[in-house]
Image 1: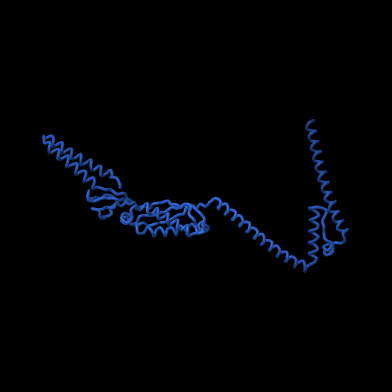
Image 2: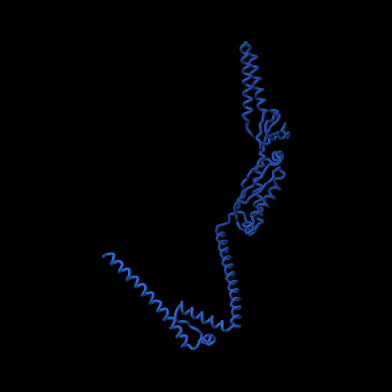
Length: 321
């Protein structure tokens, strides 16, 4: 029950002060009995008036019962009641209220234990029903939310729960709103904050995701190989219709291999005859020529480095002199 406001206390003090002034005036005329009566009457009037004055906050609704029956809803602002006859058992808050609720170790449809945390945003639309239709609407809506969450978890697969939180939130909102509507309560929204799964299952799901990524990588690689094979097929058709281009390409590949990698290349004799590169002696001469060219290039680089070193020594000697 809400405590009395400062305004009613101020009224009580003012009335008592007025009565004390009247009692003092009566006592000054040697009328002690009249002064006593004035004090008693003033106290009773101050108590009644201060009890009759009530002030509700802008978001509050006062439920007034008269002799045990519902009388009216009052507020916000200043209003009056009849003391002793009227009572205010509930002050209903009509603002949007948030309630956190969760379900621990609840089995999903595929028998996986999960912990789910959620937040409920709700508002009292009918204070009369909230006060008269349910004993404690705050506890009632909390329990209704928890049971609805457990029901939804038991009917949902784990994968759907992890991927479709918005859908679960909408389902929870509809279920809770249907249960709390007779109490004059409207559910604005439900937000699922977190879904916790066992660590072992989390590791297994991580491995599954990694395997799925590897599978996708292999599929992409296979598609690439298929595209390369198709391009090779097109190139083969081109070389079939143009043997000269095939010979030039083969000679270029052989030359690049001898030039960059090594001076020994194994070439099938059938390929040599097809490409019309001559006998094995011609290939050997070509290989030796390329090898000699590489050696000459290396010797030139060595001589250039030695000349740089000699010039550097001469520069140092001149500086010492």
